[in-house]
Length: 112
Length: 116
Image (cartoon, rainbow over all chains, first blue to last red; front, top):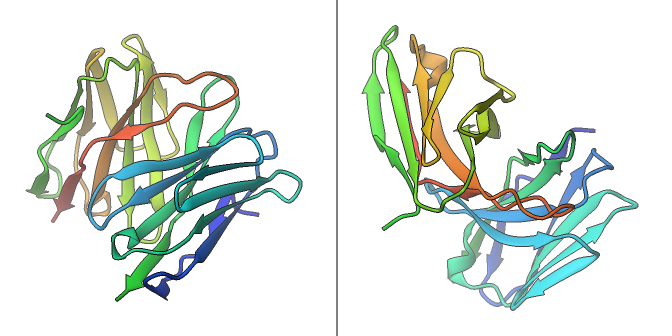
């Protein structure tokens, strides 16, 4: 299994739809995880972090399944402004380094 | 003003030239990172530094070198640029976080480098 794997998409959804992205990871020792958002030609920005089973922030919910080693991101009531690439990020927890491994990203396009 | 700045924002150069990309931050973070991003490959770590006296190679350090001039400054050099180093380069900073939660990284706006 690759270290961090995401469906590249693109996901094309209408405004108001609910969309979910999944991410699988190989390092069972990782304890915290992130979703970053990256707009075209811009820098990645933190969207959410998840350490326990899940985290919710408004329309966004991140869930963690340690047994199956996957993380999900759910976006409800999609807005045009949600169009971006969503990066799943998993720390390499070894020797205190906390290096991050980035997935290749899932592209979302929200259509009017 | 942006917390993490990168200069230049765009650069076109020729094979064999020496190039330096600079990163400055006002966040007061000890940890700084250099990544490159290529289409279809995601972000890959080139070098990272946990303080001024600490420099570590990342996943793809060959062909690159770095200098941590101060807590706030971290430069990336390409001693002899080659075309496959054409990419989008990002600098990032972090404050170390609180274990077991890894720290959040904050990215600069990126430098788009083209090597002809």
